[in-house]
Image (cartoon, rainbow, N blue to C red; front, top):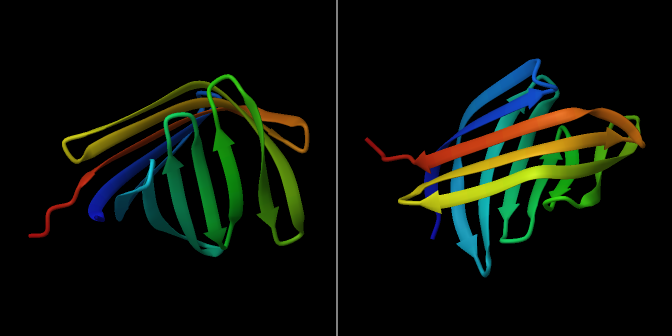
Length: 137
């Protein structure tokens, strides 16, 4: 069953730059995973984001104007990809903190990770995604 949700995404890079996004999306469970889905409208066009959450792993998939695949497992270095108009970049994530909770129709995801692009350090990122059921008026 899908639940309409209000989602707040907050990304902090190296504790300096912070980006916040407030969107509406959908949350649902399929087999042994939870999924959070939302669209982000950017200058380049619309980006569809799917966050897949399981006990062991979080996977962020973005498609549309930006194509990205970012996998996370606690204390494991994982390979992903970031596709731009002029080429595909290999990325690496190393999650130092990874925590997901969901109860009473609201959830919270917290990830702190080291990010590399083409084997070059690109900073330490802190990602907070919180969401709650959106009640129709």
